[in-house]
Amino acid sequence: MVTMKDVAELAFVSTATVSRVLNNKSNVSSELRARVLKVIEQLDYRPSRIARSLRVQNTRTIGLIISDIQNPFFTSLVRGVEDVAYAHDYTLILCNSDEDPAKEALYIKVMRGELVAGILIQGVRQ
Image (cartoon, rainbow, N blue to C red; front, side, top):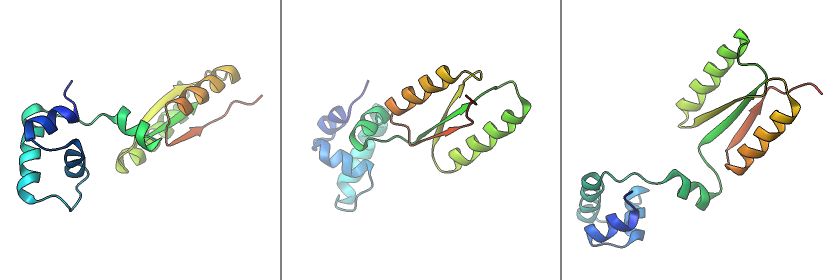
């Protein structure tokens, strides 16, 4: 896996400069930006979403917990949530609780551990 450090070494810049290029900061000369972008393309570098989420303590991911994925109502609901999430550059994690409060609680715990940006729950009655 190619790292930001690999890009920096090949472009003869610091990892901070690579980060500024990736985040489109204005304090990088056009020549330096072009050199870094060329190396990024050459190495097919992809920033790590995991590393970013650890740094900012958040992801661009939303969790959706529904009680019964086989219910046709939820098919439309999931589609709508996913469409809106995608339009705002978010991804979606979908969980089916099977109307089980323990399973729902587990999914909430897992999503919180994954630092999702938010959780939408069609809750189970207890």
